[in-house]
Image (cartoon, rainbow, N blue to C red; front, side, top):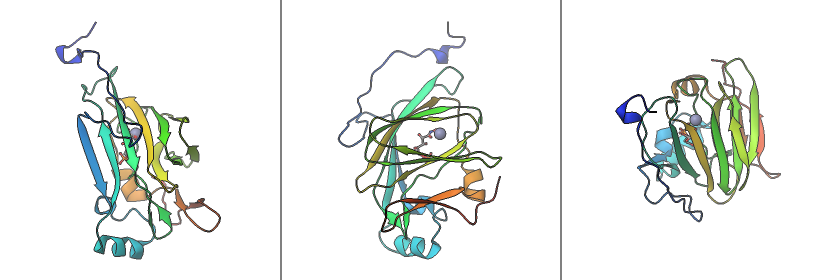
Length: 198
Ligand code: PAN
Ligand code: ZN
């Protein structure tokens, strides 16, 4: 039984538009343009050049619903990352650890292709390839970022505890251990030389 009145939620269903990745009646849509990711791409000159242009859309997050930020509740959303690059580096999300660091997450690929990059504060690094139909698990304590390595939007569904929260500061301060760059022979995962362990 719920222990507080705001823990009570009615069952509901949301539709995900599989053609676009949008949730048409989302509670909230967050838009991330390149200016929101300023400083996160490796090629600072390419980033400045792109920012001097039209400040392109990089990704949108469709938050399906709102829920009390308490243990036991789930949130879910879709993320739609546009195709594109800054210099050689593919468009990506900001990336974060969860503010409650032991909170887990499940990603399910719906459209396009990309990678889930993961890292721990004590130096473990991982990359999971995601395509439509793949389910990728973000274990406790792993920071995570997604990257669109394809030519069409990369869309995935994310399901996570409502009390997970976001720590963006660690990634902004210390960077991500790996970057994904494009070249003649396809996407390459390369170490980030400026990365520092948090
Ligand atoms: C996802 C992410 C979403 C956008 O729902 O929040 O893909 O990435 P950033 O939050 O790093 O900008 C998730 O991991 N939620 O916990
Ligand atoms: Zn997360």
